[in-house]
Image (cartoon, rainbow, N blue to C red; front, side, top):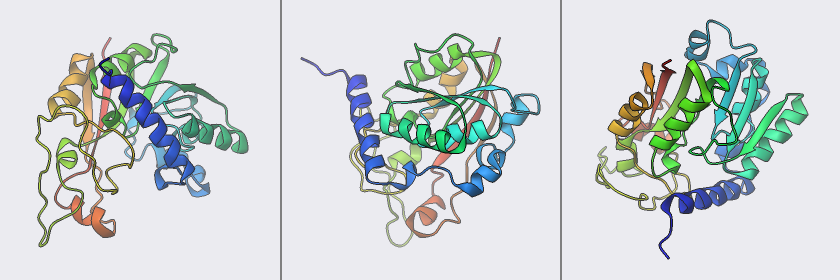
Length: 259
């Protein structure tokens, strides 16, 4: 029997993130007191949510998509939003449950894949916020279609993605400051296993999505792109900071669902 690549990726990545939680990996650590003291600074550094939602996020309905781990959901709740969190990993959702319980916030938690939000209603949200995660599905188009469906007309979608070039490139610089492209731009299927680094999570199956899919796909799903940024990591110490001088690891996109 031929394996379904989507189901294989979902199960592999569910288990990988459960394992990362069990090992105490940095990306699974919840937000701390400093971030909860100023939650808007942590979740909306560019003011995109406030601008997109008319100046205030208080009382707005937000879906934190593929965003478990005790950070995104609780911080958006601390900012005054009505929060639903979707994640494929039950261990990451448990982090949210514990943080919300300890800090007195209310969250709706849903275990599901980012490309199947059938448990959520049409036009249910004012905003969808998605940290880096589209690399874990073979096709971003179903993700965008589901986000468009659950957003109200005029709702905003803030998403962050691994850039194609970063996923093509080697994990570390070669002396004296060269960065080789190891994967073809039109690579099909899961990426080859990479050595552990800040831009690749151990145990996961990841997929390279081209700019035509990341940006064009948003437009085809009924979104208008209002802003785009490439968060800088060049000031960080070690290999990640040095590598980021040569290739931007992430792109952040603000899009609005058309009516």
